[in-house]
Image 1 (cartoon, one colour):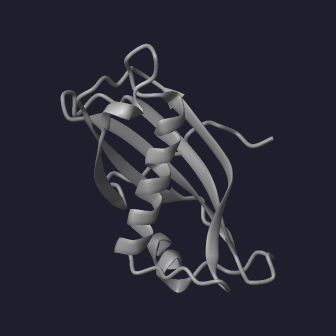
Image 2: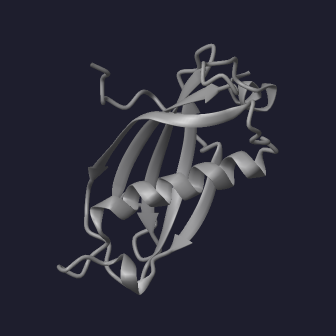
Length: 139
């Protein structure tokens, strides 16, 4: 079983983005539905890869093999969620992505922390080395 303890993160995130909460993102209790935190991380991950110039092709693409989230405080509408994204623990074909989430009304108080293990695959469905553009994050 993998540890869910967060490693030491760099001082500055590798990438940041903001995602506005939609009215329909709320659950019956009036706050951001717990499944949407992971959806926001997914969106941030692909914005991050795109901004880094990482091309996804049928013979080279990332998949998530592990995911987790710790909810620290509720997010209520209207809100904009800022995601600070970090890449750590590089392997031959994988890395851990960590996300710290904040809201516009409390920009220094995290509302959640999430993580996912990202593995790079080839057309055969087997792991392949991380693309050079991703590997450069760790140099």
